[in-house]
Amino acid sequence: SLILVAGLALASRAATLLEFQLAYGILVGIGGGSFFPPLMASVTGWFEKHRVLAVSLVSAGVGIAPLTMSPFAAWLIEHDDWRTTQLTLAAIALVALVPLSLLVRRAPSVAMDARRPAQSMANEPIMSASQAFRSPQFIVLALTFFACCATHSGPIFHTVSYAETCGIPVLAAVSIYSMEGIGGLFGRVLIGLAGDRWGAKRVLVAGLLVQAVGAGCYYFVRSLDGFYSVAAIFGFAYGGVMPLYAVIAREYFGIRIMGTVIGAATMVSALGMALGPALGGWIFDTFGTYGWLYVASSAIGFGAAAIALAFPPFPSERRAALSVA
Image (cartoon, rainbow, N blue to C red; front, side, top):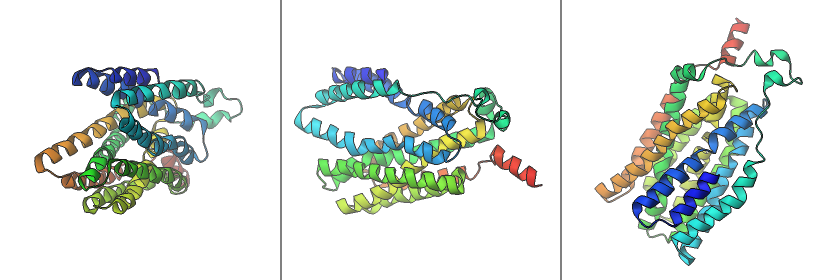
């Protein structure tokens, strides 16, 4: 939280593009990217039943941000300037995030919790971090996460600009991102419920397919109503699948190295998040249109679903199969 605040404040004072890139790209990037792993590691340790739903509800804050901060930032820029906007956001982060961070509690160790049966830890996967990073399940997890983020990052980043090229005013264009946030809120809850019912891996594949279709549908829309419709479906899919990676990591690797594993997978996914905007910018500069961005994003999205099909069985699934046999 403090790194994020410092990055926003320093970015507001940048005198050159390089200074802005260093402050915003590095500090804000490090700060913002540091929230997901510890929060996901904590919540997956606290909940045994309905774990997918619990993780999805905790991550719902990510879906609320587009509904609130994006229109607020756009309003600030229109009424003041970008420097004031950055400084205002830094102040909000300082007042809100730092105190809230102090309320987060690490999940109790199952082995040390006298209220749980002693054998509860026996079913936990025992693996070192180095073993985990070389395992097939981590490779599939990281590659799926990468391709998933590469799919939605380009449309997330460029759709507001794309809508403006279609003649939609800037405030209305920003509201498209808010609509994605609304879809993401519903996606987190409903996909969380579905994950608890049918399993995280199955629901992840289904969500990735919907995300791929949604990305491709942006190619065909030009009106605000059309953007809203696609944004709701697209946001539902990518917002809903994101928490599933933490649940899958928890099943494969256990609570002992959960933070390390999800942090490493998130780092790989960040490369996918970086690829989408850069690819979209290059496509627009080369072809003068964003259309091919959505075609490429859709293709990558179907690839993500195909990679996810390679997940091996969970350890709990293997134990269940052996017990039946």
